[in-house]
Image (tube, rainbow, N blue to C red; front, side, top):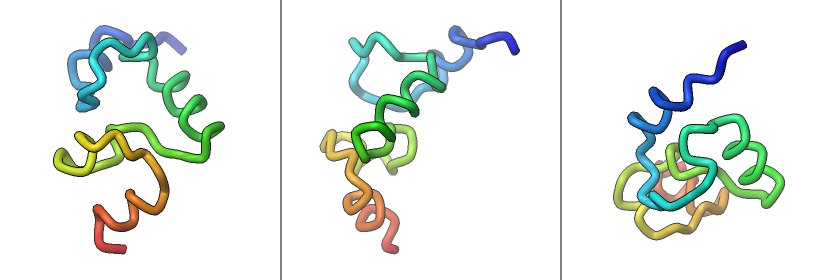
Length: 64
């Protein structure tokens, strides 16, 4: 499977723009899950800007 890094990076909603994994969604997801958190693209804009990637913040942001 070919990585679509340019397309992914162009559509990435994470505000941490200096991240080396930007556009490398599989690496980003793997890293966040290993840290028991989710990537910024899983959060609505206001919650994403807090950089709190915890599952608890995800549930709070989406009203779960």
